[in-house]
Amino acid sequence: MGIPKFNQEMLAVTIAAIAAVTLVWAFLMPEAPVPILGAAGVVFTVSVVVVIRLMMDPDSVRALQSDAMLQLASSMIDSMGEGLTEKASQEVCELLLPNTSAVAVAITDREFVLGYAGYQEANNPSGSRIRTTATHQAIKDGETLVLLSPEAIGLPVPADECRIKAAIVEPLWVGDRVEGTLKFYYRNANKITETQRSIAHGFAQLLSTQMAAVEMETQRKLATAMELKMLQTQINPHFLFNTINTIASFIRTDPMKARTLLREFAVFYRRTLEDSTERISLARELDQVQRYFNFELARFGDERLGLEVNASPGLQIMMVPPFLVQPLVENAIKHAMPSEGKLVITVEAVADGDDVVIVVGDNGVGMSEETCANITQVESSTGLGIAVKNVHDRMIGFFGPDAQMVYTSELGVGTQVTLRCPGCAKVTVPVEEVSSASAAEDEVAQAAARNEATVAQLAELVAQVDGE
Image 1 (cartoon, rainbow, N blue to C red):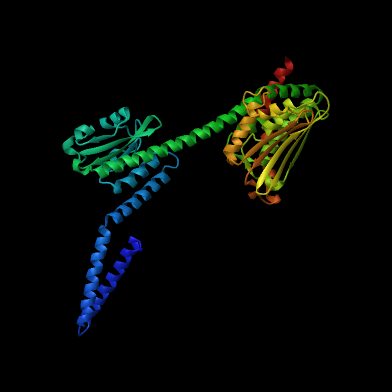
Image 2 (cartoon, rainbow, N blue to C red):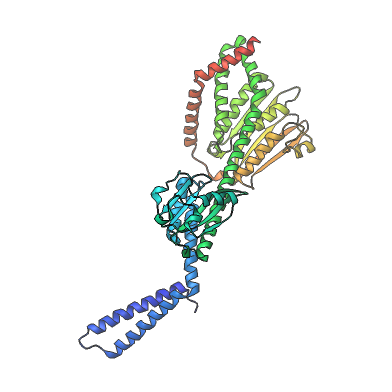
């Protein structure tokens, strides 16, 4: 038959129920109709036999068991979203206990109990030290242990006082190292069947895989943070001293401008150090670009340097990785400045279908085709490599493999960097909301600029430079 077994069972149960109701009705009749009684009895008997056979069918039993195990595995993975924490370990132990023949289930790291459910749970709280010698052995050797006596387990409680007589201890591997154990305790050795061994090994592998996945995600986030720190370090040294020298020069000629620059400098560096999260708004990034440019403008003068920013207000709410545009503007000032004339840098953000395209261009000295082709190489002789590769890699990591960063340049004409952020144009907001957000950010910037402690520290640096 083409009817699924579950539907067959339900159909048989329904028929049996109808037959049973018919039997009761017939018995309650003053004159019981014998043909109806006989037919109902036969249908009821046959239905019950069919239900029993379907329920005992090996394929049906295996299907039910597999479904239960898959649901259990799914629940375990959900609990371990942040790794094998004490809370997650306790939840996993409580999930596993009713699905095995064990009287207790435990999870440990290399030194402490992370979770424990079942017999003697109160005596094994999370955070307590591992007490069994077998657990230490499994961590040391990295091998599964099947223990058939209390003495082999190495429990501190005397064997005659403890209900735990056997155990399975599975090491939890992350890469090439053991990071903990999964343990099943049993009332007697004959409870450890091949099924119990398979369950213990399978769930230990599941836990190990999930632990490795969480560790990989953690490492990815750390790598992203390190990349940002690399950019911060790259931006800081020369720019720091050049800006301090510029501010120092204005102390004599234009004290009010020096004070304004000093306060903006405090805000700029606070933002630089704060922006180590995974994402910030495009508006915040462009604000930081403008603030950076103002210091360079004070250094070179408006006859040598200009910046034009054109970004639709509806796009400024989109989230981007920090230091996405600023390193490109900084590179233009460092490497594209002509010996004569004015360097004009343009930053434009526009919607192109569902994508957002950010273009950073300049009318500077430009690059050769070879230099432009190798621009993302860290060892680039132009000195652009680290910043450009960093921006490119984080574009791909943040927006996915469809994200693009394209360099086009011509000697004596200028350079253009095009960043394509796929799908970002779908997330837009009314101009009024963006204006409110920008106003709120401006308030924060102004409040930060009034932080006299930071200003005083930078003023001291300027004084030191001025005195040299």
